[in-house]
Image (cartoon, rainbow, N blue to C red):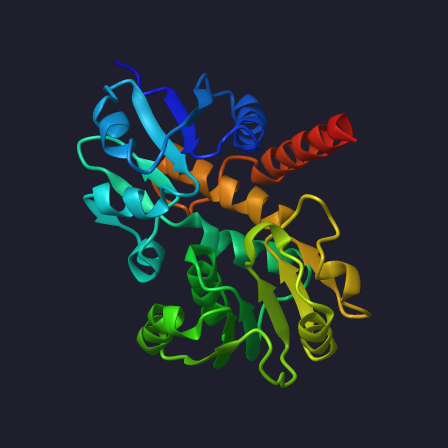
Amino acid sequence: MSRDRLAVWGDPIAHSRSPQLHAAAYDVLGLDWDYGRRQVTEAGFAEAFASLDESWRGLSLTMPLKEEAHRVADVRDRHAELTGVANTLLLGERVLAFNTDVGGIVDALAEHGITRVDTVRVLGGGATAASALVAVADLGAAQIDVRVRRPEGAAPLAELGGRLGVRVEIGTLSAESDAVDLTVATLPGGSALPDEVSAPLAAHGGALFDVAYSPWPSALASIWGDAPAISGLGMLLHQAVRQIRVFRHGDPEVSLPDEATVIAAMRAALQSQDETRA
């Protein structure tokens, strides 16, 4: 039986752009794969996963299923092991888990000329913050300032920094702000912060990479000033590219055939969807 079925699972899921991204890539690559979407709750994940037959090649996972995907895997890549989450499952005799969000952040920053950083501030403490922390560590960050609403809940990020050999300091969103090279905002939905909190962050934050992308500019990007403000749309695109590498080759680091053309088609699909919504 051919393994030609794939899907993105999450809750909610109707907003996901993954079907458009993957369809555009599969068309360029000449792959007769079927990629859909399915609303799956955290409580319903185990049953849904157990129902998959040998026609399934893989899954993309969004919130709140990334921890569940990590748990169900037989083998995990380095980024999934470090962060404790996975957004990609390759199915077969063994279930392989990957976290392509880390590489997606690295690739999105590289598109804007950011290939090395020293000091970074990460806003937020969830799964995406963990991926951001690993990404900036891969870019050479020596010191990472993590800002969260509840510092007591961010201990896992400090522990992750220790494993990466990076100094991580945890503080509140309103703590005094030193200057940094880059700010990575992972706040849900591009959450707005009070002016007395956001203004100091913008004044000393270097370039802004906000994982939010709709609507854009995000609340933070709209007040960021002269430094570059980069939307999370590039992360969405590049994590999907790495997912497709996994589904095609089993390795997120192995480029696709004619990958530049694939990426151009995926980017056009995103732009077309934005124009349709406008």
